Length: 157
Image 1: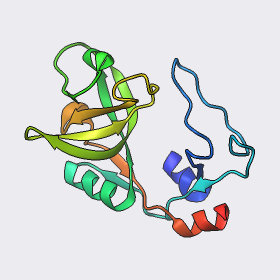
Image 2 (image 1 turned 90 degrees about the horizontal axis):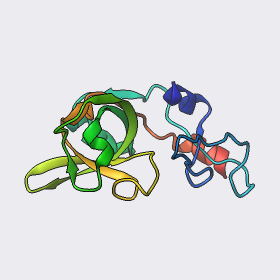
Image 3 (image 1 turned 60 degrees about the vertical axis):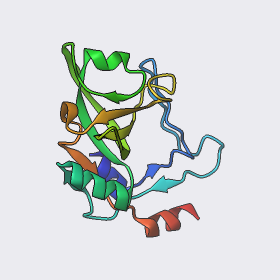
């Protein structure tokens, strides 16, 4: 639903209304940027929203259009993640979690996603984590959209 909203109405840029969360608190909706200036929004092109179900499709989308949204299954061992490439090894399933894949890499022959989390910059690697391809459903159901630069320019100039 958020992607359809972004297609029609746009969503505030992080530089305008920075993400706030942590400790279970949600950010507040506002009509202006945090500095009081007019709200700056990002849009996606009409009918450009795609569902991505493979590492290759996600890599292509991140390369061509930017970060993608995805979800994954969280297990107890993920809660103690500090650094490195996460792989589920132990602990019960705790639930699902939505995150943003911003890139990928490879270490010692192991491919991984670079992911922005929403649990504050004190968690993981400054609020990010690496997770091995194929782990916990991370690359089974991503969503992307093509940025609509003309709407952005019209609404942010």
